[in-house]
Image 1 (cartoon, one colour):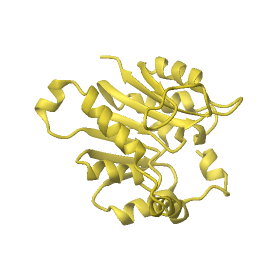
Image 2 (cartoon, helix red, strand yellow):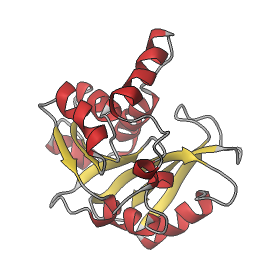
Image 3 (tube, helix red, strand yellow):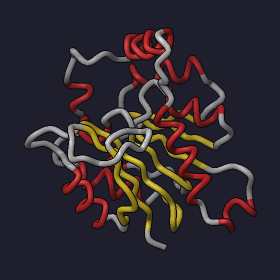
Length: 204
């Protein structure tokens, strides 16, 4: 199955995609905002029972691309699996962090046979998946969450496109409840702008 990402050739992919973030980092821009938020949320929201049993949290980076977020979360001590449909995006991830678990697959049909404390959908994943599969994607990734697990999704909001209302409806159908919503990855208040970051929790 295709996606908007693989169908839009003008979108930077692979090494070109990584180069853009490398340039931003050289300019002093914090390129790890997504990982920082997920790391903080895990520490704030994970049930005490979970952290008492094991010292690290598990994270599924769904639509991981070249692995920027997954690699940073792993550097911070989390057990991370990255999944992406596009082999051109996965190639740099596998080259730069061969020790991590990278999977090629369609999020709408994902079945990894395990669950995670959190799922992160960064990099506009939900507006790049195949049109009409957003609810299936949400259902599939939600099925990979432990009860009480967190789903963090950020994407651009465009007129007539996938929006927070549709996200909340798809999340609810997948057994997830909205916990909070922000306009940025550093938790600026939600102002119904052109970007949103949402936190949902799987019902216990």
